Image (cartoon, rainbow, N blue to C red; front, side, top):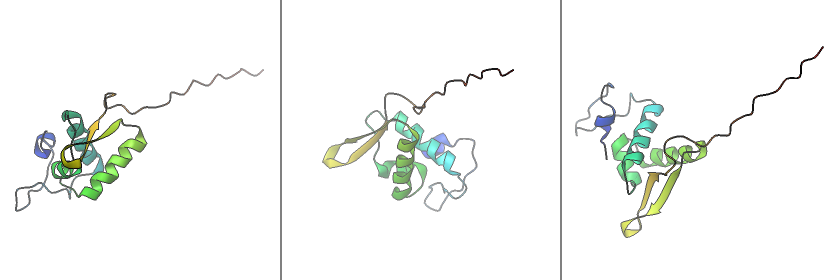
Length: 111
């Protein structure tokens, strides 16, 4: 799984005393992009703990982001791994959320 620093190459970030990157300066969009990249890169899925470590945020934030991805239409799949731990991955449909295409409106010319 790519690390947070691999994904953020080129972005400015702050290092904490333990060497971890701080999330203070990262907007939610960058954090969610990190999560999508990690979910897509993992063949067997990632636990919320692994995702939290990769993004440098809390487990609660990861759970909220997974719900937001699902609501937005991303194909997030959940499976049970070793010792009953849940693993999450991006489904076979890839990155693009499912959207409904609107038909172009047909205007009838008025005279």
